[in-house]
Length: 229
Image (tube, rainbow, N blue to C red; front, top):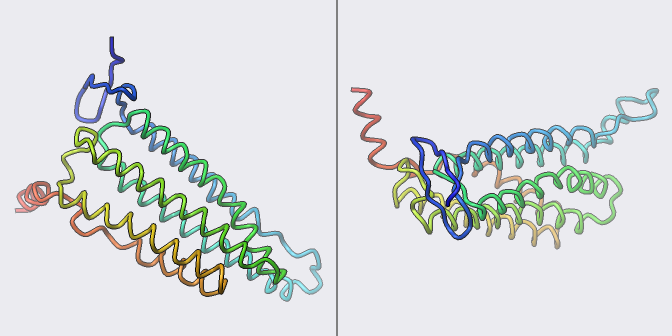
């Protein structure tokens, strides 16, 4: 007997060798909670100056902490946005999706530590290459996991909703594959020239906030235009 499944748009009882498929809304809700906690913890890594007699000078010397905070905060925000983009198109989640998403959350929970190491290295002037590689590698792993989840759900169209067609699937796939190359290049560059590595990863933020061209299916666009007219 298979486990009953309730999916968006109506009940379904489909099951695979990897277990019953479940409504992904709980996956998204849990993920949002972990991401919110992790992104909030970033600010706790910024320690106030002990010498309040020279407070302005002390605050200025904390620039590596500000840099690590802004960079990591925006990157995690980007991860959150793309996580929603991906799960907006996932009809149901089996155990493979649950497992891979758990690894995503484990990596996200590690990011405040990576940001702290990055700030400390730039503040001390020692170990910058290692710190940039650690920080970049953590985000590169996220890119690998995003690609793994998307590859898994698109191999079986049943796991995807009808809000996205084949062209949209390819568009999202291209976006996720580009992240692999971009972050890897920034991480490798950081191993040679830390400042340029950070700059390249920072440029990644700007690009990835752009919408995914072709993400919404042609049928959905036609329905939307019909409602407007």
